[in-house]
Length: 285
Image 1 (cartoon, one colour):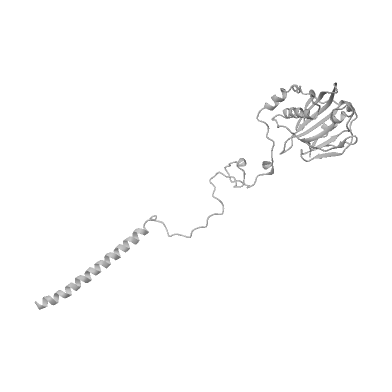
Image 2: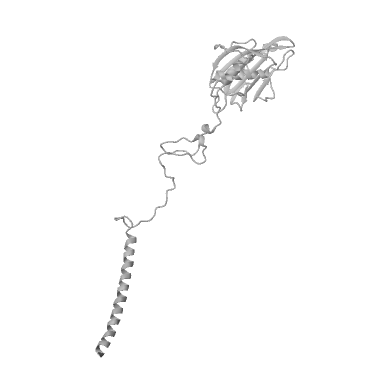
C-alpha cells in the first residue's frame, strides 16, 4: 500500500505536465495556422512585393482630351489625341460679330416707307466735281480701316458717335452738314453684306432731315463687302432738296464690319466727286 501511494504522486505530476504540454502545443498550432491563413490571401504565384512607383505627373488620358480648367466651356472641342496647347489662339478668343440668324431686321427695314426695295446690282457712276488728289490717310483704329484724309475745305471734326469724322463748312440752305465718317457698323450684322449695307443705309437717315426718303442710285459688291449709293430726298423750308450719299460695309478680321458713310447736300454739289474718292480709298489697316 505504501508503494502505491508513493507511485500515485509521480503519476499526477506527469499527467499535469502532459496536460500543460498539450495546451502549449495546441496554442502554438493555432498561431501557426492563423499566420498561414493570413498570408495565403494573395495570388498563388505572386512574387514578393516591390517598391511602390511614384504617380505620373501627367494626368492619365482616357483617349479623349478635355479642355484645361481655365478654358471657357464654349471653346472646348473634344479630340482623339491630346491637346497640344493649353491656351486658345488670339483668333479664337477675339470678340467676333455674330450674324443675325434670320432676315427679320431686313424685312422690317424694307417695310419702312422711307426705304425702297433694293435695286439690281449697278455700279456707282462718277459724280460731278473735281477729283481729290491728296495722299494723306486717316486711321480708324476702332473700325480697323483707313481712308483718305481730305484737305481744305474739309476738316476733322468731333467724331462721336463715329470713330472718324470729316466735314465741310456749314452751307446756307443746307439742312445738314456734309460729312465723311467711319466706324464699326452700328447695326446688327447680317449673313449677306448687302443686307448689312441696307440696314446701315436706313440707319443713316438719322443724320438727315426729318422726313427724308431714300432713292437708290448704285448697289455693287466691293472687296470684302458691299456698297450702296443713294439720294436722300427731303424738304428745307417747304422746298425739295436732296443729298448724294453712299454707305459701304467691309469685313474686318475678328471684328464687326467697318462702315463708311458719306453724305453731301445738293447746295455743295461741287464736292460730290469726293464720294467716289472716299469709298475707293477705304483700306484695311
